Amino acid sequence: MTAAEAASSTLIISVDKGKQPAGMPPQHSGTTSTAATVACAVCLTKTGAGGFARHACGHAYCLDPCLARSFTTATRQTDLLPLRCCGQPIDVRLVEMVGLSTSAIDAFRAAHEEATAANKMYCPVPTCSTFLNVGHLLSTLPPKADARDFPCRGCKTRLCLRCKDEAHGETTCAAAASARAAASEDEAVRSLAAAAGWRSCTGCGSLVELLFGCNHMTCRCGAAFCYACGVPWKGCTCPQWEERRLTIAAAEEVERQERVHGAVQGGRQGGHAAPRVEEAAVVAEAAREVRIAAAVTRMRRAGHDECGHAWVRRGRAG
Image (cartoon, rainbow, N blue to C red; front, side, top):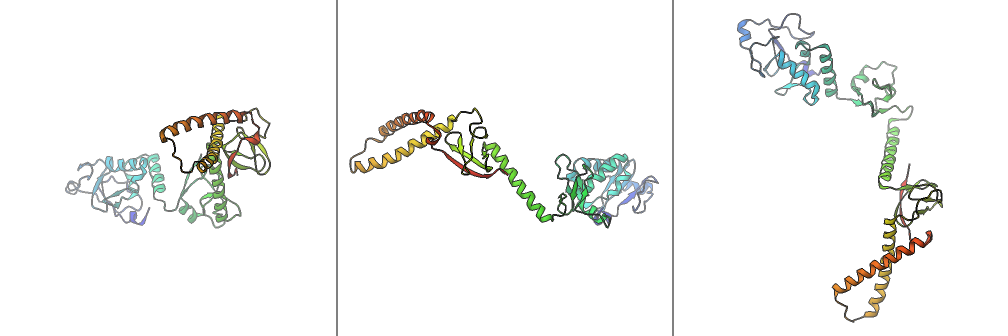
C-alpha cells in the first residue's frame, strides 16, 4: 500500500463488530441519526447491508454491493487500478470488509500489486510471462542471494532482476543486452529472408536475393547452389529457370540492346524528321515483345554462363 493510500483516513460507519481490519482507524458505531446522514455515492441508498465507508474525498460507499463490486470489477479490469474516488485513493484494506471470499480478496491483491508496482518485470519466456515485483524482491532478498540468478516463480527459469531478462552468469548486464540485441537482429534477418525467399550460400552462409537469372547460383566464395531449394548445385531436380525471373532477365537483355541501338540510330538520323509518335510506340512495343520472347527461348537453351544473372547479397544468415 502506498503512503497516499495509507493516508486516506477512511471512516467506517455502522460496521458489524469484528470486521475491522488491522490498522484501520477506529470504527464509529453510528446511531440512527448518524446513519441517516450517510448515503452511498453510487446507489444513493442509506441502508447499506454491511455499513458504509467514507473516503478521503468525503464520499461514502456502501460496503455491499457497491464497494465490493468496485473491488471485483477492478480485479478484472486492471486499468481501473489503483481505485480512486475524486482522484483520491481508496483504502485497499477495505477489501477485507466487503464480504468477498478469500480467493477473491487474494485475486484483488495480486492485481493491485501488479498494477501499482513501480519496478516490475515479466518472465521473458513466452510460455510463462509471470509477473515479478522486482522492487519488492530486491528489497527482501537475503544478504547472500544473487539478484542476477533468481528463479521465476512460474517456470523456474533463472532470471536477472537487474536487467530484467534471463540470467547470464558472469557476463555483465550490458554485454548480455548487446548479445541479445545482436541475436534479435539475426532472427529478424532470418525471418525477412524466409518471407522474401532469399537463400543462404552453402559455402559462406551469405544471404542472397536473386533478382533475375537462372537458379544456378555461384557465390563470390566459389560455392554453387540452387536458388530454388538451397542445396548444392546438381544435388536436386529443380528446373534451371523460374519462369518469372526468366522473363525479367530476357526483358533486361532487350532493354540493354535497345539502349545501344537507340544511341546508334540517334546518331545516324541527325536532323531527319521522326515518324509519328503514336505509330512508332505501337511498332516499337510489338517488336520489343517479339525480341523478349526470342530471348526467353534462347535463354532456356543456353547454359548458366549466358543467362545474365543479377543478385544482391543481403548479409549473413546468422
